[in-house]
Amino acid sequence: MKKNIFMFSFSLLLLISCSTSEVPFEHRYVINLVLKPDMKFQRAFVDSTYRLDSPLDSDLTGVSGAEIFIVNEHSDTFRYSESDTMMGLYYSNDSFCVEHGMEYLVNVSIEGEIITREVQVPGLLTIFSPGLLDTVSLSAPPLLIWNTCEHCFDNTYLIASYFTGEADSADKFAPMLTTDTTLGIFLNGLLYKEKDTMYTISVEAMDSNTYHFGKMWYEYDELKEGEILGLIGAITFDTVAVWVTE
Figure (tube, rainbow, N blue to C red):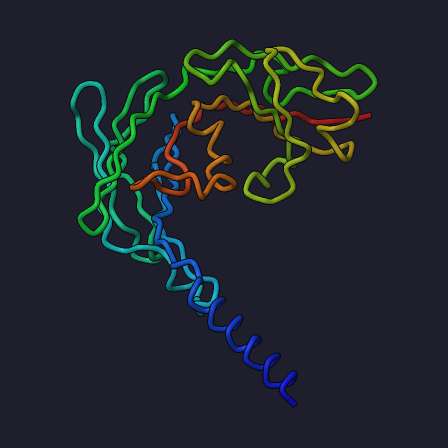
């Protein structure tokens, strides 16, 4: 009997100890804003972290009321407006044209807190070969050739391909990183899955923030006071659509 009472008391003490040592929830903002040249509108999404035990309505997530304004090298200021259809989604107006190689100061004001980041947009990137709407034969695959891009992180490029018209799908095939500016686009069959169809091949260059943004997720405990989750950065890219045959 005494043994049972002891075990019960020990279990209760352990339960109380665990409940009182729970790590307090630490709120963080989540901001995704990537500047892209040659796009009519720039967009950003502002959200926050949530407790794992908090019920969420996906239609009500996102942070409303943020102010986003971006300043270029010439001290011109461009402001984003919040979407009427989706909470936390913000769009620039068509007067804001992101330029290759330019530096921007990105400012996001949320509930009195201002997050500021300097962003250097990589330079112009152009695919030289293959040409637009070329027919590409798998029996004699051409080289994918593009230029060296200024201000991109370590001259590292992300190469991907996908069925033309499905750029927003999850079916981008085997994206790969390379520091070269020449690549066998059908190397080991990584950049195609079918023949006799149209593919879009994409070459993308990133600034250092964009290239390294993934580390923020697995180094969450190392974030300094005032740091955010997500990504504020820039990319430049070029695409070419080709017909792939046997």
